[in-house]
Length: 486
View 1: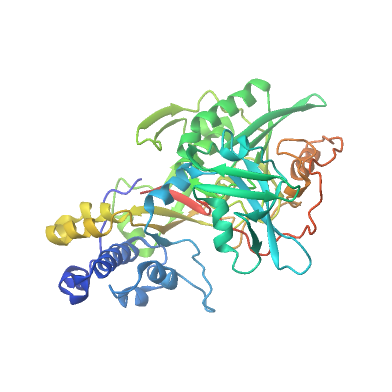
View 2: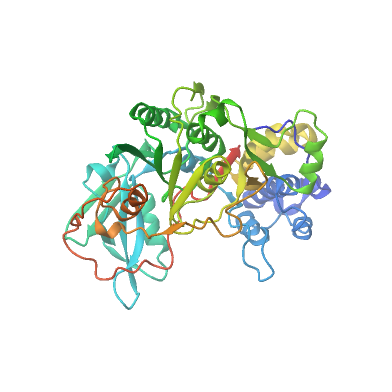
């Protein structure tokens, strides 16, 4: 992260609140130290710190911090969230794991549909499974419809607790519409976001296809391998499927962009992107001679992977030097996905296929509360900092820090998402697997390349009673995140 130092707006209330009588209880002390951490970082780094300045100044250390942050983050005149992403969590480790790709999981993704015209119940239709996951080993496939979760139907109202059992836990029993019952045991694993890559050959040309589900730092190996295969095959047109990619690490966006941009642009080290900060940070960074708000294309990278080790790698030999990029997007495409597309637009021919993207145009910082108390012990006072570390273990924050933009300062997905050039909706219910040229979104994109696949019968053996997608969808772990550092 390119921050040289931090300046804090530590209020007198932060420094003397340890004397508050309510801090005698464990809950009160936890609130004291979490609120101090969250408030001071929001006053310093929050993208809209001036817009919510009154709320920040009125922030009491006795308030419940998760609800408080959700309440005061930036909203429009009607009270609806403009910032839908800044949040505080008491389980930072799990939160970080959801972004890194390493977590306890069943290893599948799904979309909710109504089961009948009354809209009283839902089913979860599987969109894909991760390689080697419990879900894949149990035989779950795209198009399978889950109607009961641990013996219960999924209500259209108050669905959250039932749906959350599909997204995490230790053991899951899923009853499918085709009569099967599948039992899954969750396990710790890396969900490899490079779901598949392949090359379609027709009419004397070769078109690449890459499904990428999350911008994890560990994915550089598979991305380099995939792009090397595209290069060796002579691929000049690539279909990048981001329909289920809700974001991830900015560094992963940077190395994928450097793999996909024209090779001459990368070798020249052209500007990849730039950032817009709040007024205080803008003034501060302007005073720093060594600060640059721009990120540049490059071939040499160093990242810290999920195992805590640093890895150096090069993309120099893997860039296929594309002429054309097609991106498949939906409302599930967010944050780093939108940044990648926006950053590549000024440099290459990009066509968007699908539905409007999510509209997440900010980059955020992942901040651990105990690191705050370690780093600023001198300013906070050793006693206050020591107790702060004690009462904030595993607390953390995802804080909107900047607005990302392309080389010209344009943020194409702001405020409501990227608009597709060709409209087509995802239909996992047809049961046709990703990568099959008959799958509806891939088929439409291939047709733009001049290829018309033969029709194929759906895999699903029995129809779902209603094919209408539900108005609400669960947010996958790590959705809507673009992480600058932590």
